[in-house]
Length: 175
Image (cartoon, rainbow, N blue to C red; front, side, top):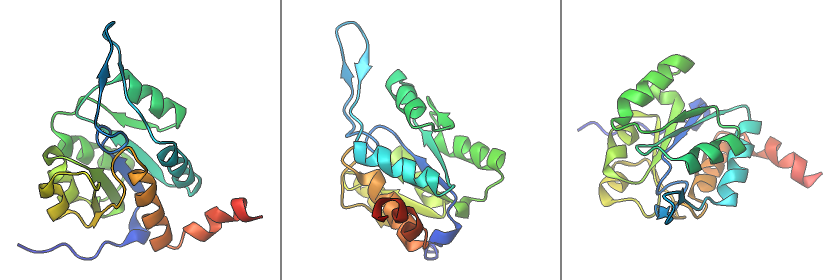
């Protein structure tokens, strides 16, 4: 097995996120009327806004289709939302092709075995703290925070700081 080279954080232009277990804690609440709800972290939401202000792209890639996910994506103005993807790697490859990007220019955050092909394929594969062991074993980075509890924000800060993009984003908060 050839281990992956150390990720080039400066090359990352696209952050792709699984939803359930990454942007949420993985729980889905089904209400008696058939609707569902999920909890999303405000820390993650602000991190996504910072990522966008840095001129970088973001996408959601979920195996489940959910109106709650679609609504959160609209709130955060996430242009690329792929839901109901039973096989995620082909969906990611299609997205990369449509954006004119190479795998090395993408980071992916996942938590379960269906995310494994992508974690191994992209330039930076990330597992959240509560991910299954198989994902953690193949990830380039494992978060300290759990999914739904600021893990996405942690990844965003890791990439932005590691690529030299963080300081200019902080100027608006320090002036």
